[in-house]
Picture 1 (cartoon, one colour):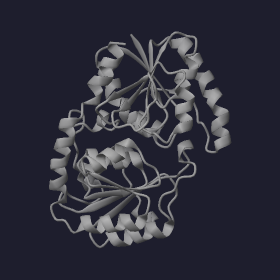
Picture 2 (cartoon, one colour):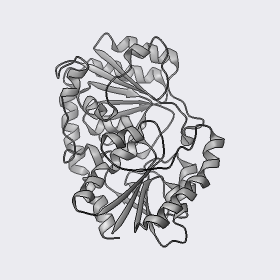
Picture 3 (tube, helix red, strand yellow):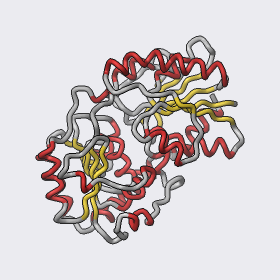
Length: 339
Protein backbone atom coordinates (compact mmCIF):
# COMPACT_ATOMS: atom_id res chain seq x y z
CA UNK A 1 0.00 0.00 0.00
CA UNK A 2 1.27 3.42 -1.03
CA UNK A 3 0.00 6.62 0.60
CA UNK A 4 0.22 10.27 -0.46
CA UNK A 5 -0.04 12.97 2.22
CA UNK A 6 -0.70 16.52 1.04
CA UNK A 7 0.37 19.59 3.07
CA UNK A 8 -0.87 23.16 2.59
CA UNK A 9 -0.32 24.73 6.04
CA UNK A 10 2.10 24.33 8.97
CA UNK A 11 -0.72 22.79 11.05
CA UNK A 12 -1.04 20.05 8.42
CA UNK A 13 2.58 19.07 9.04
CA UNK A 14 1.81 18.53 12.71
CA UNK A 15 -1.41 16.63 11.94
CA UNK A 16 0.30 14.11 9.68
CA UNK A 17 3.88 13.90 11.02
CA UNK A 18 3.28 11.07 13.52
CA UNK A 19 1.35 9.04 10.96
CA UNK A 20 4.20 9.58 8.49
CA UNK A 21 6.80 8.38 11.00
CA UNK A 22 4.62 5.42 12.00
CA UNK A 23 4.18 4.28 8.41
CA UNK A 24 7.87 4.86 7.70
CA UNK A 25 8.74 2.65 10.71
CA UNK A 26 6.40 -0.03 9.37
CA UNK A 27 8.14 0.08 6.00
CA UNK A 28 5.22 1.57 4.06
CA UNK A 29 5.85 3.95 1.20
CA UNK A 30 4.62 7.51 1.84
CA UNK A 31 4.83 10.38 -0.64
CA UNK A 32 4.49 13.90 0.76
CA UNK A 33 3.48 16.87 -1.38
CA UNK A 34 3.48 20.43 -0.05
CA UNK A 35 2.70 23.96 -1.15
CA UNK A 36 4.49 26.94 0.33
CA UNK A 37 2.44 28.46 3.16
CA UNK A 38 4.02 30.26 6.11
CA UNK A 39 6.45 27.87 7.88
CA UNK A 40 5.26 24.62 6.28
CA UNK A 41 8.48 23.95 4.33
CA UNK A 42 10.65 24.89 7.30
CA UNK A 43 8.76 22.46 9.55
CA UNK A 44 9.00 19.63 7.03
CA UNK A 45 12.74 20.18 6.80
CA UNK A 46 13.11 20.37 10.60
CA UNK A 47 11.36 17.01 10.89
CA UNK A 48 13.44 15.52 8.04
CA UNK A 49 10.33 14.77 6.00
CA UNK A 50 11.11 14.67 2.29
CA UNK A 51 8.48 16.36 0.13
CA UNK A 52 7.61 17.36 -3.41
CA UNK A 53 7.41 21.15 -3.73
CA UNK A 54 4.16 22.23 -5.41
CA UNK A 55 4.94 25.95 -5.22
CA UNK A 56 2.54 28.57 -3.84
CA UNK A 57 -1.08 29.51 -4.36
CA UNK A 58 -0.09 33.17 -4.05
CA UNK A 59 -1.50 35.83 -1.72
CA UNK A 60 -4.38 37.49 -3.54
CA UNK A 61 -7.82 35.97 -4.14
CA UNK A 62 -7.22 36.16 -7.90
CA UNK A 63 -3.89 34.34 -7.63
CA UNK A 64 -5.41 31.64 -5.45
CA UNK A 65 -8.35 31.13 -7.82
CA UNK A 66 -6.01 30.92 -10.81
CA UNK A 67 -3.79 28.38 -9.07
CA UNK A 68 -6.56 25.94 -8.07
CA UNK A 69 -6.51 24.17 -11.48
CA UNK A 70 -2.72 24.61 -11.71
CA UNK A 71 -2.25 22.75 -8.41
CA UNK A 72 -4.71 20.06 -9.50
CA UNK A 73 -2.71 19.55 -12.69
CA UNK A 74 0.56 19.26 -10.74
CA UNK A 75 -1.05 16.78 -8.37
CA UNK A 76 -2.41 14.70 -11.23
CA UNK A 77 1.09 14.34 -12.70
CA UNK A 78 2.40 13.20 -9.31
CA UNK A 79 -0.44 10.69 -8.88
CA UNK A 80 0.26 9.20 -12.30
CA UNK A 81 3.99 9.00 -11.59
CA UNK A 82 3.89 7.51 -8.08
CA UNK A 83 0.55 5.66 -8.21
CA UNK A 84 -0.51 6.04 -4.55
CA UNK A 85 -3.45 3.93 -3.41
CA UNK A 86 -4.73 6.53 -0.94
CA UNK A 87 -4.41 10.31 -0.92
CA UNK A 88 -4.93 12.23 2.33
CA UNK A 89 -5.08 15.94 3.07
CA UNK A 90 -6.75 18.62 5.16
CA UNK A 91 -9.32 20.51 3.06
CA UNK A 92 -7.30 19.46 0.02
CA UNK A 93 -9.25 19.99 -3.19
CA UNK A 94 -6.16 19.33 -5.30
CA UNK A 95 -5.90 15.66 -4.29
CA UNK A 96 -9.58 15.23 -5.19
CA UNK A 97 -9.35 17.06 -8.51
CA UNK A 98 -6.03 15.46 -9.41
CA UNK A 99 -7.40 11.96 -8.78
CA UNK A 100 -10.56 12.31 -10.92
CA UNK A 101 -10.90 9.25 -13.14
CA UNK A 102 -7.78 7.55 -11.76
CA UNK A 103 -9.59 5.18 -9.34
CA UNK A 104 -7.73 6.44 -6.28
CA UNK A 105 -9.21 6.92 -2.82
CA UNK A 106 -9.14 10.46 -1.48
CA UNK A 107 -9.64 11.03 2.25
CA UNK A 108 -10.16 14.68 3.19
CA UNK A 109 -10.16 16.01 6.76
CA UNK A 110 -11.73 19.27 7.84
CA UNK A 111 -12.72 20.98 11.09
CA UNK A 112 -13.40 24.43 9.62
CA UNK A 113 -17.09 25.01 8.98
CA UNK A 114 -16.66 28.53 7.61
CA UNK A 115 -14.26 27.37 4.85
CA UNK A 116 -17.23 27.13 2.50
CA UNK A 117 -15.28 27.69 -0.72
CA UNK A 118 -12.77 24.97 0.15
CA UNK A 119 -15.53 22.53 1.13
CA UNK A 120 -17.39 23.25 -2.12
CA UNK A 121 -14.23 22.44 -4.07
CA UNK A 122 -13.48 19.05 -2.49
CA UNK A 123 -16.88 17.76 -1.34
CA UNK A 124 -18.21 16.47 -4.72
CA UNK A 125 -14.99 14.58 -5.48
CA UNK A 126 -13.67 13.23 -2.15
CA UNK A 127 -14.11 9.54 -1.39
CA UNK A 128 -14.62 10.22 2.33
CA UNK A 129 -14.70 13.39 4.43
CA UNK A 130 -13.61 13.07 8.08
CA UNK A 131 -14.64 15.64 10.69
CA UNK A 132 -14.61 15.86 14.49
CA UNK A 133 -17.96 14.72 15.92
CA UNK A 134 -18.59 18.28 17.15
CA UNK A 135 -18.47 19.61 13.56
CA UNK A 136 -21.53 21.84 13.12
CA UNK A 137 -22.34 21.10 9.46
CA UNK A 138 -23.81 18.05 7.76
CA UNK A 139 -21.65 17.25 4.73
CA UNK A 140 -23.77 14.37 3.50
CA UNK A 141 -23.21 10.61 3.17
CA UNK A 142 -19.45 10.92 2.62
CA UNK A 143 -18.94 12.50 6.05
CA UNK A 144 -17.53 10.36 8.87
CA UNK A 145 -17.45 11.88 12.34
CA UNK A 146 -14.88 10.80 14.94
CA UNK A 147 -14.54 11.69 18.66
CA UNK A 148 -11.37 13.76 18.46
CA UNK A 149 -9.77 16.98 17.29
CA UNK A 150 -7.14 17.52 14.61
CA UNK A 151 -4.82 18.79 17.32
CA UNK A 152 -4.90 15.46 19.18
CA UNK A 153 -3.02 13.87 16.27
CA UNK A 154 0.10 15.58 17.64
CA UNK A 155 -0.73 16.86 21.14
CA UNK A 156 -2.19 13.70 22.67
CA UNK A 157 0.18 12.62 25.49
CA UNK A 158 0.88 9.39 23.57
CA UNK A 159 2.73 11.56 21.04
CA UNK A 160 3.68 14.76 22.83
CA UNK A 161 5.89 15.31 25.87
CA UNK A 162 6.66 18.97 26.68
CA UNK A 163 10.31 19.94 26.74
CA UNK A 164 11.16 22.65 29.33
CA UNK A 165 14.46 23.41 27.59
CA UNK A 166 12.66 25.85 25.30
CA UNK A 167 11.90 28.01 28.36
CA UNK A 168 15.59 28.40 29.08
CA UNK A 169 16.15 29.55 25.49
CA UNK A 170 14.00 32.60 26.16
CA UNK A 171 15.25 33.23 29.70
CA UNK A 172 12.41 31.60 31.63
CA UNK A 173 11.90 28.62 33.91
CA UNK A 174 8.88 26.46 34.74
CA UNK A 175 7.80 28.71 37.61
CA UNK A 176 7.72 31.91 35.55
CA UNK A 177 4.37 33.25 34.40
CA UNK A 178 4.14 34.12 30.72
CA UNK A 179 1.45 34.64 28.10
CA UNK A 180 1.34 33.74 24.41
CA UNK A 181 -0.45 36.05 21.98
CA UNK A 182 -1.21 35.01 18.40
CA UNK A 183 -2.06 37.43 15.58
CA UNK A 184 -3.01 36.18 12.10
CA UNK A 185 -2.68 37.73 8.65
CA UNK A 186 -6.35 37.26 7.61
CA UNK A 187 -5.18 36.28 4.12
CA UNK A 188 -6.64 32.77 3.99
CA UNK A 189 -9.52 32.33 1.56
CA UNK A 190 -11.88 31.43 4.42
CA UNK A 191 -10.89 34.61 6.31
CA UNK A 192 -12.51 36.99 3.83
CA UNK A 193 -14.80 39.42 5.65
CA UNK A 194 -13.59 38.24 9.07
CA UNK A 195 -11.82 40.28 11.71
CA UNK A 196 -9.86 40.06 14.92
CA UNK A 197 -8.07 42.66 17.05
CA UNK A 198 -7.29 46.25 16.10
CA UNK A 199 -3.81 47.70 16.72
CA UNK A 200 -5.11 49.62 19.74
CA UNK A 201 -6.71 46.49 21.18
CA UNK A 202 -3.45 44.60 20.78
CA UNK A 203 -1.58 47.36 22.62
CA UNK A 204 -4.15 47.43 25.42
CA UNK A 205 -3.82 43.67 25.77
CA UNK A 206 -0.03 43.75 25.95
CA UNK A 207 -0.07 46.58 28.51
CA UNK A 208 -2.51 44.66 30.70
CA UNK A 209 -0.53 41.40 30.62
CA UNK A 210 2.92 42.88 31.21
CA UNK A 211 1.86 43.67 34.77
CA UNK A 212 1.42 39.94 35.42
CA UNK A 213 4.23 38.28 33.48
CA UNK A 214 6.21 38.07 30.26
CA UNK A 215 4.36 38.58 26.97
CA UNK A 216 5.32 36.55 23.91
CA UNK A 217 3.80 37.29 20.49
CA UNK A 218 3.68 34.97 17.50
CA UNK A 219 2.40 36.66 14.34
CA UNK A 220 1.84 35.74 10.70
CA UNK A 221 2.48 39.31 9.62
CA UNK A 222 4.83 42.17 10.39
CA UNK A 223 4.23 43.72 13.79
CA UNK A 224 4.02 47.42 14.59
CA UNK A 225 7.15 48.91 16.17
CA UNK A 226 5.67 48.93 19.69
CA UNK A 227 4.78 45.22 19.46
CA UNK A 228 7.87 43.93 17.63
CA UNK A 229 10.02 43.58 20.82
CA UNK A 230 7.56 40.98 22.11
CA UNK A 231 7.85 38.74 19.04
CA UNK A 232 8.74 35.12 19.71
CA UNK A 233 12.23 34.10 18.63
CA UNK A 234 12.36 30.29 18.80
CA UNK A 235 12.15 27.56 16.20
CA UNK A 236 8.52 27.05 15.03
CA UNK A 237 8.32 23.39 16.10
CA UNK A 238 8.89 24.44 19.72
CA UNK A 239 5.72 26.53 20.03
CA UNK A 240 3.76 23.62 21.54
CA UNK A 241 6.26 23.26 24.37
CA UNK A 242 5.74 26.94 25.15
CA UNK A 243 1.96 26.62 24.90
CA UNK A 244 2.05 23.80 27.47
CA UNK A 245 3.89 25.95 30.03
CA UNK A 246 2.09 29.25 29.28
CA UNK A 247 -0.26 30.70 31.89
CA UNK A 248 -2.69 31.84 29.21
CA UNK A 249 -3.14 31.86 25.44
CA UNK A 250 -4.89 34.82 23.80
CA UNK A 251 -5.20 35.31 20.09
CA UNK A 252 -6.88 35.41 16.71
CA UNK A 253 -5.52 32.00 15.71
CA UNK A 254 -8.15 29.28 16.02
CA UNK A 255 -5.78 26.36 15.61
CA UNK A 256 -3.47 27.65 18.34
CA UNK A 257 -6.47 28.38 20.57
CA UNK A 258 -7.48 24.71 20.30
CA UNK A 259 -3.89 23.56 20.76
CA UNK A 260 -3.61 25.53 23.98
CA UNK A 261 -6.81 24.02 25.36
CA UNK A 262 -5.71 20.49 24.42
CA UNK A 263 -2.48 21.12 26.35
CA UNK A 264 -4.30 22.30 29.47
CA UNK A 265 -3.67 26.03 29.01
CA UNK A 266 -6.59 28.47 29.38
CA UNK A 267 -7.43 29.78 25.93
CA UNK A 268 -9.01 33.06 24.84
CA UNK A 269 -10.01 33.18 21.16
CA UNK A 270 -10.84 36.64 19.81
CA UNK A 271 -12.33 36.48 16.33
CA UNK A 272 -15.54 36.79 14.35
CA UNK A 273 -15.13 33.13 13.35
CA UNK A 274 -16.81 30.17 15.01
CA UNK A 275 -16.51 26.38 14.79
CA UNK A 276 -17.87 23.30 16.51
CA UNK A 277 -14.49 22.65 18.12
CA UNK A 278 -14.52 26.06 19.82
CA UNK A 279 -18.14 25.63 20.91
CA UNK A 280 -17.47 22.23 22.46
CA UNK A 281 -14.28 23.31 24.21
CA UNK A 282 -16.16 26.29 25.67
CA UNK A 283 -19.52 24.84 26.65
CA UNK A 284 -18.69 21.19 27.37
CA UNK A 285 -15.15 21.44 28.77
CA UNK A 286 -14.88 25.10 29.88
CA UNK A 287 -11.31 25.28 28.55
CA UNK A 288 -11.61 27.85 25.76
CA UNK A 289 -13.54 31.12 25.60
CA UNK A 290 -14.50 32.59 22.25
CA UNK A 291 -15.27 36.31 21.80
CA UNK A 292 -15.89 38.57 18.82
CA UNK A 293 -15.57 41.61 21.06
CA UNK A 294 -12.30 42.54 22.79
CA UNK A 295 -14.13 44.29 25.64
CA UNK A 296 -15.77 41.06 26.79
CA UNK A 297 -12.51 39.17 26.17
CA UNK A 298 -10.62 41.57 28.46
CA UNK A 299 -13.22 41.05 31.18
CA UNK A 300 -12.64 37.30 31.00
CA UNK A 301 -8.86 37.73 30.93
CA UNK A 302 -9.00 39.88 34.06
CA UNK A 303 -11.14 37.24 35.76
CA UNK A 304 -8.65 34.48 34.90
CA UNK A 305 -5.62 36.52 35.94
CA UNK A 306 -7.02 36.74 39.48
CA UNK A 307 -6.97 32.95 39.88
CA UNK A 308 -3.89 31.41 41.51
CA UNK A 309 -4.62 27.77 40.68
CA UNK A 310 -5.52 28.23 37.03
CA UNK A 311 -3.15 25.64 35.57
CA UNK A 312 -4.13 23.03 38.19
CA UNK A 313 -7.78 23.60 37.33
CA UNK A 314 -7.11 23.18 33.62
CA UNK A 315 -5.03 20.06 34.27
CA UNK A 316 -8.15 18.35 35.61
CA UNK A 317 -10.24 19.62 32.71
CA UNK A 318 -7.66 18.24 30.29
CA UNK A 319 -7.88 14.82 31.96
CA UNK A 320 -11.61 14.73 31.28
CA UNK A 321 -11.08 15.86 27.68
CA UNK A 322 -8.50 13.12 27.04
CA UNK A 323 -10.79 10.51 28.62
CA UNK A 324 -13.58 11.46 26.20
CA UNK A 325 -11.47 11.79 23.05
CA UNK A 326 -9.49 9.27 20.99
CA UNK A 327 -5.81 9.19 20.10
CA UNK A 328 -6.22 10.29 16.47
CA UNK A 329 -3.09 8.59 15.05
CA UNK A 330 -4.26 4.94 15.44
CA UNK A 331 -7.56 6.08 13.96
CA UNK A 332 -5.80 7.53 10.90
CA UNK A 333 -3.75 4.36 10.52
CA UNK A 334 -6.84 2.18 10.62
CA UNK A 335 -8.54 4.36 7.99
CA UNK A 336 -5.69 3.61 5.61
CA UNK A 337 -5.26 -0.09 6.40
CA UNK A 338 -9.00 -0.86 6.28
CA UNK A 339 -10.01 1.25 3.33
